[in-house]
Amino acid sequence: MPRTSRRFSLLVPRQVHWMSVLLGFLVLLGLSGCARKNDRRLIVGMELSSPPFEMTDEHNQPTGIGVEMARDLATHLGKELVIENTKFEGLIPALRSGKIDLIVSSMTATVVRAETIDFSQPYMHIAICCLVGKEAAVHTAKDLKQPGRRVVVKNGTTGADYARDHLPQAQIIQVGEEAACVLEVVQGKADVFIYDQLSVYQLHKRNPATTRAVYEPLQAENWAVGIRKGNDKLRVGVNDFLTQYRAAHGLEALAQKYLQDRSALDEMGNPFAF
Image (cartoon, rainbow, N blue to C red; front, side, top):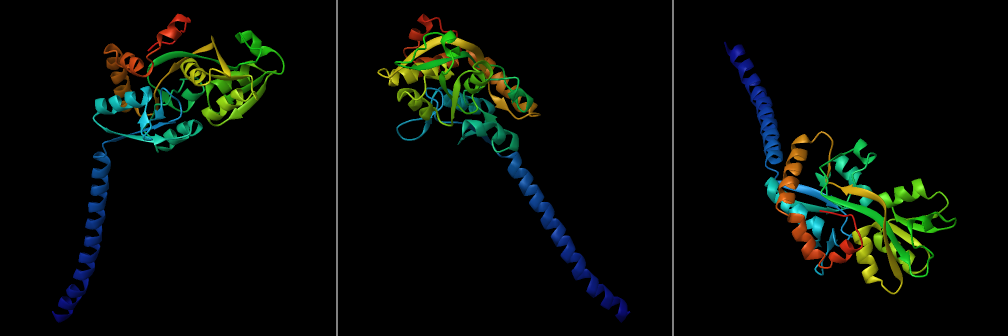
């Protein structure tokens, strides 16, 4: 009897110890699961250097058409918006790795991009065109194909893809920042900057003495929200939001706020539409 009692006294503490460890582990798992379940954030990646869509205001706060649309999207989904300011070429890797939930950054839905990420329905139809140096001999799209043209493009954009695929005789200058691309044109180091029409319009307005805008479309494009592959629930939610937003003329209202002189582009036969 004493021997049995002694054995029991030795075993009980070990059992209690391992049971405590196991219970603690299960509690931690439960807490972490609850944290994920209760994570109400919608982390949206965008490059805040593309006015009037994604930019910062005088207080260095995110603003613009895309920013406000993202805020309304988060509200629709019942989540808190968190914006991750990310280089354009880093947006898709950030989405695929799970660092961000969505891309809202004036991103064109292309076949190549759709191989690695999903896209929502389009929220904007637009085209790419040319910001041209004041003295450059470029007046139409055909002029781009003259040998020796100096074409600056922003890394990761469809303007860069277009130059690579359609302008084999051009000297292509690849730059990482929109402002640096514009500077190449302003300083006469490049003849043209290939970019979307609305941005070209804004950039020309800021540099009227040194640039011209050639709005002739090089190719039509659709902007959409980037979504990680397999996240069908979020994709359905985004598409539901865009359908309702379009019906309520939400983007039209933002255009009126940020593009008061949008009629100037309409008069030029601009094909973009919200």
